[in-house]
Image 1 (tube, rainbow, N blue to C red):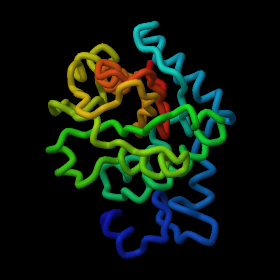
Image 2: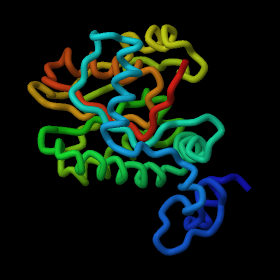
Image 3: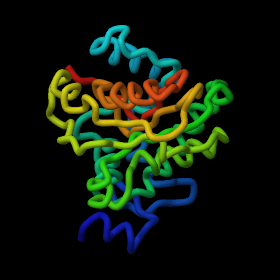
Image 4: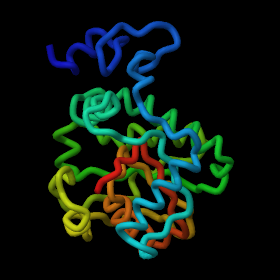
Length: 230
């Protein structure tokens, strides 16, 4: 039975191992969640995010603050969960991850500096294919937690791009060059840009460039996971 159908019929099962959830568990059982690799401190996640982006972009991509919940590992329970969220129709997992990210941002004391939350958009055709944008699903509970508006309409994906999976850092940058366009008013705003996974930062960089070009004053970043890529 496909996982998406299983979770439709039995919504209270773990998204990784399909074990029935008990009271206090949300999305994942305690055993699978224990195999995730959370950053011990929000500053640790931010530091690794800055190092990852600086290694690819130097000082050409500067951002204000950064938040990541987990370090991504291949063939891990977290990868399975993110894959199910993104491709398997389990969009409810995005709400779980979004609430966690919202708590992380709120606990940092910097939420009041943010003006709006903007999810990284999918191309319209890809959104029709998947029926939802996982970044929007993550961004909404995050925005609610920090009491800031989610502005999903201000950034648009102008052209469809090939999957970033398997591309080198240079290929990722070329793939996303000019892919985004800001279509709403972000003039003078501090924008919190949200995506599910950051690998080289190319998606965030391209989206940030469009927002800054439209007058955004500052950009901060939030993602569920950071995947280190050699």
